Length: 252
Image 1: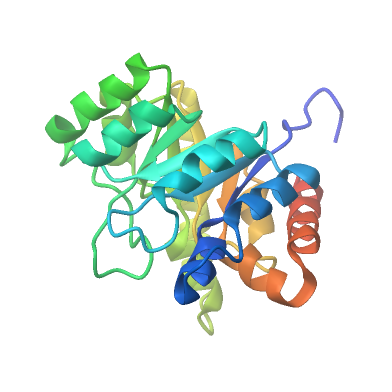
Image 2: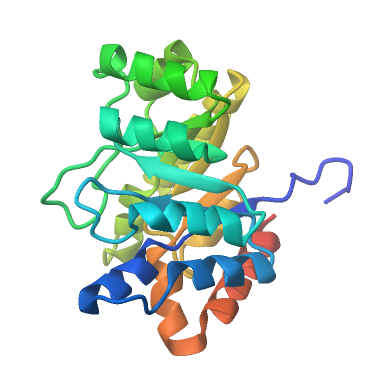
């Protein structure tokens, strides 16, 4: 591929929530998610993602400032669209706030945010974050209706939920479903970019399924967490990030 048409480097944001999950399982301070953030910075990660949930099941309030102080990497704060989380975001002023759906009983974020159906609720939240100089991302399904809602809300970024694609990759004989989901993500990334919205993607991405997603030229960033932290148990966090980074680069 010519240097003139080579897609831009795809950024890797590393979600460190599950380092905090392990810490909280036993209490105390070990393992410290701040140390994970420092490792991400040391091996060339492009950003830190952390989800401050309403029940504080992994990241805690005091982790946010410590993460921001520990590295110069941009912090992407995943948050529900609540007054409590808005106040915390405005106080800490992360580089970005990714608004996600949140239900107490879910193990992880299930599905994308219904930005279209929640327009009136989301509009003041998005507006206040943008007014504070915080970039806003909406974590949505790869669906044209949701892209259009992001446009109406003035969100500069969308993160396309790749969970259905990842699930199709695991199904025996799921090649057709995988291809459909991959095309849907590619089409919505192109639609977002065409309308001035920067598309990101994430959820369920692994060494085995990341490259077709990484090859989508409009995507600017992938956010990956659970898989990298899981692999780190066997090979270390540095190695798990380096391998993911190499797979992403090879796909471009």
